[in-house]
Length: 116
Length: 111
Image 1: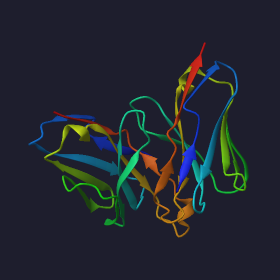
Image 2: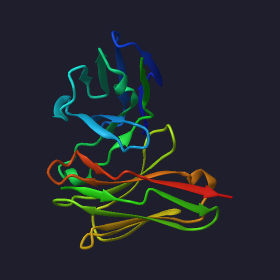
Image 3: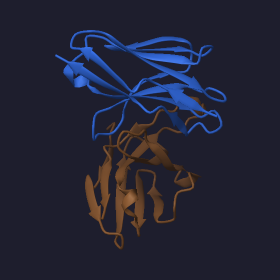
């Protein structure tokens, strides 16, 4: 199994809603990532988990709350989002290697989020 | 600062060869990635270079010159399905799990 899966594929939510994005991988990768991508822009790193612990938070607003319940799952909890948060949200995973320069990130298909 | 430059758009003909260039100015270097991204889809890993030279994978090859801060992705025998955005990314030497991304090159393959 060489896939990263994400659900849902599409999500429409109001600014007062609470929703969650889910990501799963069964490649034995112990690093998992959340990215945000706007149209015609490169992915923008949000969070990195390593061994289920948050290792990087790129100063993301608190209305985005990540969670890594186990080594295969990564969630992103959304609350009180703004219309400008509408984007493609990508999950990625990579092995954790002693030589970090050898790690490669593999992306899931993304969740396209629209905030009204 | 850290900067990745690549052309915004390129056009090529089906069956031809195209070279997409990427230049980088970064503090330190720990590897360079090429990803392909079709519109509305996720980036797909194509290649990784950490040492100078050419890496070949089927129709795709990637070259790196660390002394020149330069890489290229070579696509041979172009197919219509190769129409996509090609993203160059350099690993952040200060934090290896962060990638510094170029803005991407949108390649259109015409019949």
